[in-house]
Length: 314
Length: 317
Ligand SMILES: Nc1ncnc2c1ncn2[C@@H]1O[C@H](COP(=O)(O)OP(=O)(O)OP(=O)(O)O)[C@@H](O)[C@H]1O
Ligand SMILES: [Mg+2]
Image (cartoon, rainbow over all chains, first blue to last red; front, side, top):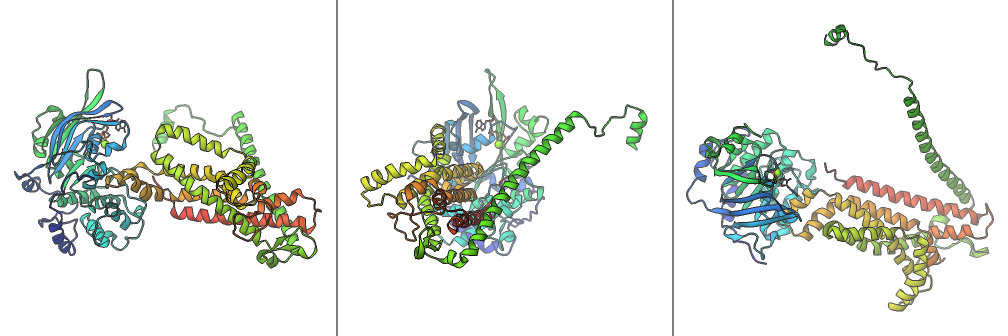
């Protein structure tokens, strides 16, 4: 089986530092650089952006003229843009404009929908994800996904996190891998005494962080999040946002959100999708604008973007 | 305050009181009929249990309970010294035949369920599912004679060259397997399909392959329903009469050689009740004792399955 890509050499060295540091401090509250970010207190946008805007940022995905159709009807059309490595990219837009459809093409989740078909190309570190010899299972091993509704498996908390490493046949001490993932998911302190309990007994916010931890356990290169906080209260949402900041020095994150403040708070880049009605009356989604988040929110190029981000249109 | 002012405003007061309209009379009659239906079902159940128990008590006034439960020789219809009331051979024969049936039905049934729920195209499903349901509709007497006239002589003795008796456990067990296969397959298919697709997506999203998703996530998530189906199938096999009567023979056998003739409890009851015995004789009363035993066994099995299902059931919202 061909490897889709070499795994970026990020994994081993920062991890050692983390498990040492993670032991004394609550991971959710403080990002790596020591700034204090309690839940709800959003970091200053400039402060977050500075490191990400570094010029050495490379594309992790290059999407070109991507059209996704269900049963032959385009749901998103002619999408072209690049998603940068180790930054947070937000996808915003009204309901039904194809954000979920788009994000699912990035790890070939759409393969699971028989009626879905994809045209155009998605390059991941330069490799065409839809080339005939690419195995979607290999793709998903590197590109994890977190869904709108928390979907823990009906197993223990431990087994949920261990699931990924087990199916991937990852080598190493499983207890350590589970602990590390739970720490990175800012959940360790809450669950360390009940790892053997069923994950269904957790709160919704904990379940969602478990799903993030579960995705992190396989040490992915990219995490796709489709409205990960839409079912959560502001405190849980804040925790997940904090978590995203901590992750992004190692992982590229793409997040779909309906929450404008959230997009403005967390993301470096923003893509705005909208529904377009074509000549034949069919509705499909398109990308209207893709730029630095600050630009999209303060000085958008397209008036539809402006109308949406300022809340003047649904 | 507000209500008072509305009333003061002086609109016509709406009539909200309960009246004896024709509609309410009709509703009461329907309610009474439905209650009667429920009452009759309950009364029937109680009647069956009471009559069963009364005759069983009578039986145990003539035969010691330990002689019955622990004895290893079952020949209640024999004459003189040969008469013996040890029920163990019947119980073990029942369980043995059921086990043979399950050995056939569990792998085939679960295999078809997994195929149907997780792999089959909608078209394949549209063909296979009705065929399974057709299989469930075959009368057991047909299955019994199929075992006697095809499985035993052609399949076992002919093709496989196994030296089985005309009436034998292997043939009856295979037929029992065919009998309960649709139960296992249909219920397992239902529970697999009831597993929310979000779990499948979650597992795929972690880089699991299709077999890993199915075996490590979907199957365990559906386990409580699958086990409930297996228990139901086992109860059917335990209580099955005709197939065992026709293909299994009439030998209360404590052994485990599948080539031999075996009898189960239900087949014993059918055979004895058909035979020429005096009412209220001890031979006659064995029918009720065995019936009660069978009833208790099925009850225990169901109780276990309910506990199991409760314990492992997941509530997906
Ligand atoms: N499995 C499917 N089969 C057919 N059509 C689908 C399927 N999934 C989505 N669509 C259609 O594709 C279009 C885009 O849907 P999508 O779910 O991608 O939108 P979205 O932007 O994620 O919306 P929301 O914000 O409500 O989640 C919609 O018109 C939808 O009806
Ligand atoms: Mg969506």
